[in-house]
Amino acid sequence: MESFIFYLFAVVSIASALIVVSHRNPVVSALSLVLTLFSTAVLFILLLAHFIAVIQVLIYAGAIMVLFIFTVMFLNLRDDALSFDARGMKLKLATLFVILLIVGYFSHLGFKKGVLLLISQSKNPIPENFGTAEAFAEILFKDYLLPFELTSILIVVAILGVVVIAKRRLN
Amino acid sequence: MMGVPIEHYLVLSAILFVIGAYGVIIRKNLIIVLMSLELMLNSANIAFVAFSRALLDMTGHVFMIMALTVAAVEVAVGLALVVAIYMHKETLDIDVLKMLKG
Image (tube, chains in turn cyan, red):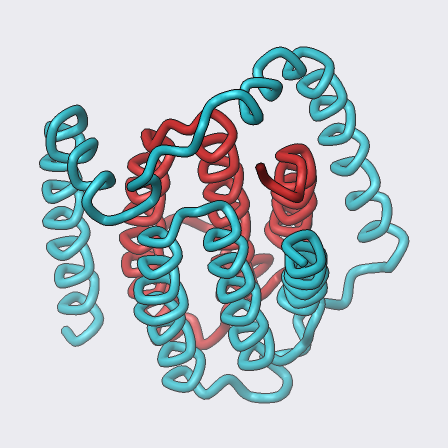
């Protein structure tokens, strides 16, 4: 049952990711991206990362996608503005296969070295609070407090940057 | 015990990353390029959480949240730039937007 759910949502996420990069209409691409992120959230639940799955739905599929769809609707792109992709099919396929070749080579190398690392999954019992908000907060606020605080600086910088860009546009 | 081996999650992550990189390279619409970047970041998140499950160590979850924060910030700034560029140039074709002179 678990593997059936995994393969179902893996296929859904790959198919909708292909729609994201190949569809002509940006609105369809944005909605397919929502589908990809939702099926990724299901995979996170399968990986016992319940808190992460909730965060994925709230932030990615909620906040970020609302921003995307709002921008696409706000710009109101005309039909000739949508038909940007006029490059040849041969170039597209060649690029895809070159990337596939490189990634396949490196993942082959990684799997050869990763055998010892991955065996340990079956030996240890799963901790009781694995993936809950409680255990997550314990690690975040004990071991990674400084990176967490630095994130707030990053967000302040982003807010200031967006305000500056938006104000310059009005002048 | 988990029903699905961790390698399958990593292969899914690699496939999604390749699709995202393909979109970044080949698409000419700036908004779609940003969406493909989101796909790539999301595939990295899958790898983080999968390794976290395999090693039973929740550090990967923390890094996934960090990556998600960076993704949100990047989208906010990127879409503000997209709106500013569209107001200025009336196009989002990245082949037109080559000059970084403003």
